[in-house]
Structure formats: structure tokens, C-alpha cells
Length: 61
Image (tube, rainbow, N blue to C red; front, side):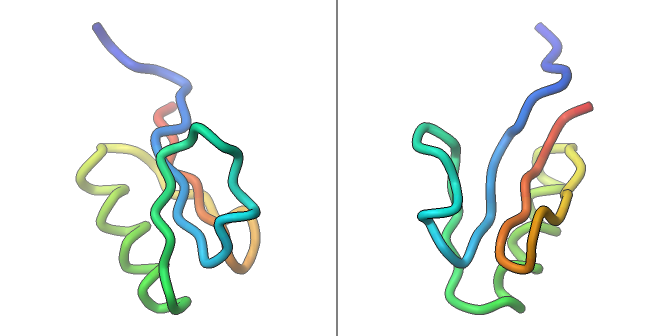
């Protein structure tokens, strides 16, 4: 099975900005958030998109 066009995870500083049911990684600092998003992008073979200053989503196109 190949996954396409799917949100794999969200990385955030504020859990209230991410919908329930998503795979959420909550970080304490912006630097940590940037690093976690980059790591997940590589691990999940996805693309990180910055939605705001405190939310990234990792998607599979």
C-alpha cells in the first residue's frame, strides 16, 4: 500500500492549534520545533510545511 496526499504529523509549540486525532509533536522552543520538523521530514519521507510561526505539518504528496 502506498500512502499519498496525507498529513503524517504536526509539530507545534501550542497543542491547541492542531486538531484532535493528528499525530502531534509538542515542542518547548522554536529551535526544537524546527529540528523535530526536519527530523520527521527525513524519517517519514515527507515534506515539512510551515503553516505559522508555531505550527509545521509533515505531508506526503
